[in-house]
Length: 238
Image (cartoon, rainbow, N blue to C red; front, top):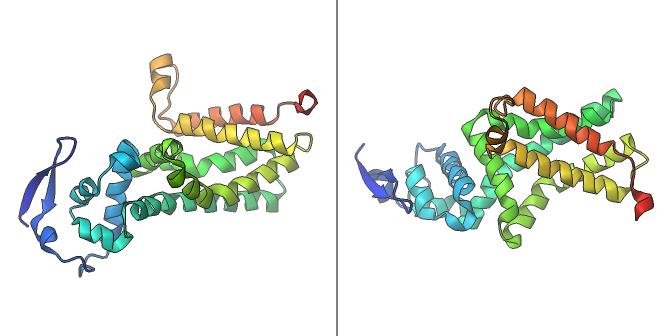
């Protein structure tokens, strides 16, 4: 297939199919995977450049499709961003709920088990390049404008996160509702930093720690978060 080179905003050469650029914005025959290919390309770019910093042209070039085709599938850049975030965010949330339900059925609402169940679905994403991109995207979402971030974060995670707050309150009946929400929020902040490949730990500790070892990461995170969750109540201070 003939290709032409196009220069992206960052000066990186990308290849775009000449046939694709001639296609009309209808659904292409024999291209059932094109929607996922657009999502995959957009995920990497949104993770690296953010919502405002990413253009539809860059996404089209990376996915080797036309901008018209992106609009056909997703309606707008925001529609595409929404789909990119929710396709993995919903899966994480669903798996968290499933793991929590298993703990309840087994009568195993121990704090460390609850923490493990909450963290594992996201940690598993570190095994692939696309998964790591989503973790970066998820961390970056907190810096996006509220009109973009709040709706997506709430839609993806509110139900499962509140379910975990309630589970922690069952396991830790001495903490207040306020404390439960604080501690879950701090857990979220800690795992986002630890999972999102900032490379800060390698700079600080050299070869002492191994942040690419997911088992080591999980063990350290579970120990740290469990200790914080099990801390005495501070309600008398308020």
